[in-house]
Image (cartoon, rainbow, N blue to C red; front, side, top):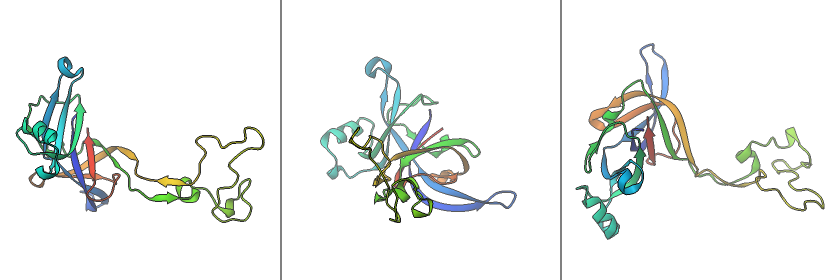
Length: 205
């Protein structure tokens, strides 16, 4: 599966040929360097390791500097492996946004925005007092009853309760590529992708 590492720039909208306003996300896709070629004989599987976004050598370990030096490049901040890459690549090759074409569909994976500790209404969509459930009584956004009586005398695993929300790996599938700006390494995909602006995303096709 071919793909690239990119950075989410933000959202905008463009007009199509029918004059319809389409919301889209702008992604800086690549250029990525092939930093390692995994082979079945050595590693047990075949894959390409791509690196994106230069990192200051002062902030890199010597092991990382040596690893990237084999590919003839500086240390990278983000490294991802892609299996079943569509084209044959060699160590040190540069892969840019030209691997994508307008009109095709891609999957975009990223880490969703962290929202901190949230209650059950925001985290799980509980109804509150207006749609009161068993054990709710008169507290507006309380979770209601969570446990049983003398048996089993505990709260079951997986019970929907308050807690940390966001910061999860999320993949959005089948986003249409609206535009490819090769000279600026920009990719415009229809709709929204997970993560905050300037966060890393993985684009696969």
